[in-house]
Image 1 (cartoon, rainbow, N blue to C red):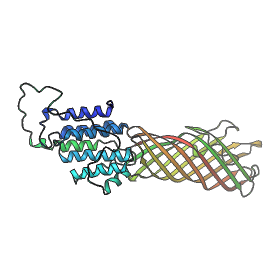
Image 2 (image 1 turned 60 degrees about the vertical axis):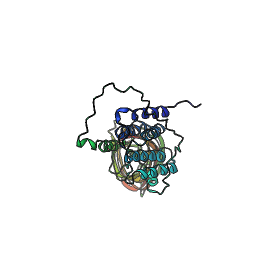
Image 3 (image 1 turned 60 degrees about the horizontal axis):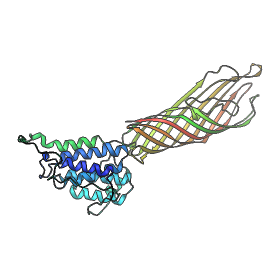
Image 4 (image 1 turned 45 degrees about the vertical axis):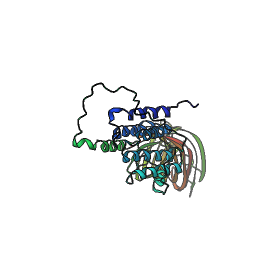
Length: 396
């Protein structure tokens, strides 16, 4: 004999509450308010916390306890959320379509919760499906409903008659449902979301750079290559020297702003700068500035995890001033244009705040270098960078 799990216990509690005699059972819609509270609890307290099975069990238990005492609109809303859970949490598209069909059979005007549903749920909601009653295809079973003839609490001995509801009170169930819908947790990527972020706060990078002067400046060789790797922690060393670089200009932390112009599609940019005044010939004065423009595509893959790939152009400017032998001062400046690819995993431990981590790749497109010492020389330069970076985002 199988024991009771948390899903079955939740279903029994739901059934007991809905069967409470004070709810005037027996009339269609008499249990709407209690059912709406359980639907809200299933989505806001269980599903948003990652307990998809518990949320579905609570919704199925609510429907079973409703019997004929909940309105078709309320039962349709419960089936709609069951469809979202089956599609987005369990990837059970056939089960989701069956649940959506059951919702439409109860209320042809039922609307999908766009703030909660992911694209695959939207597609399943819009597709054709049989109107058969949706089975528990995810292995989640509702608990048996508590019989109304055996309430868990004794009826009051001399209860006063319940006054008739005021005219405006009849709108309470609809208002409660609307309030519950507006309180649904929103994953990253909803149309209109504005995202503020700090990128490349931490990371490990491997880079390579080269320049090719048209003619010698009298000190530096006409062509040089350099490469390196290491950690970037809040403030990497930046600047130019030798092959145009003493540090990694693409490891400079940046502040970004992205706007989701469509569901899952973002446009944005970022800016970052760093400098070091230097205190000796071995530690020269350096500086770097970065500017980024990008387009992104975000999708939630769970209740607290999103994937957000971004593609764009990055521009970096760096410079170094260094004193060398015979008091000849060498000033080097470079400018790079790279194609930047970032594949960010966004972990949202708290609603609207996330941690980002993922691979980043900066591929050289063009660049230039200018070196001024005994003579002034110009040439071509390029810079490539690959690594794993982390940051923070907040979205509204």
